[in-house]
Length: 145
Image 1 (cartoon, rainbow, N blue to C red):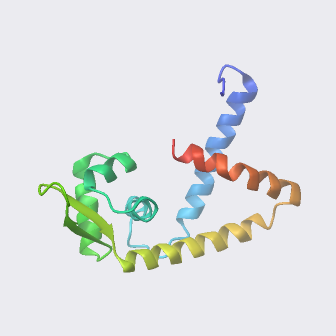
Image 2 (image 1 turned 90 degrees about the vertical axis):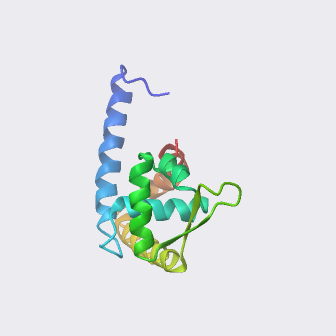
């Protein structure tokens, strides 16, 4: 466990935060569809990763308020990227499902971002690449805590 009162841990946490933020900003510039906000792209990614969900479930997963998610879903629906279907057990709710258009756009976005990240990673030596490869599952876990 990190101990922020320990100088090395505090420095590591600070360096990790800074690096993740810079890398995230640079990756965001590698978007395929500039008309979508990062939040809209994130919602589509969540649907691709987790499958169909109610707007309330999406709001929890995306850490936004339900009214905000309702607006985001409406925008995505208007763009043809999600469809709303009746909930199988609760008529008061809808289930949000991504469309084939959204899935194709996400795949192209992943391809573009992976190509960019691959090109950047070519600047690493073998030892640095091995360390990054080993750290990837830990960073994935951290991203989903």
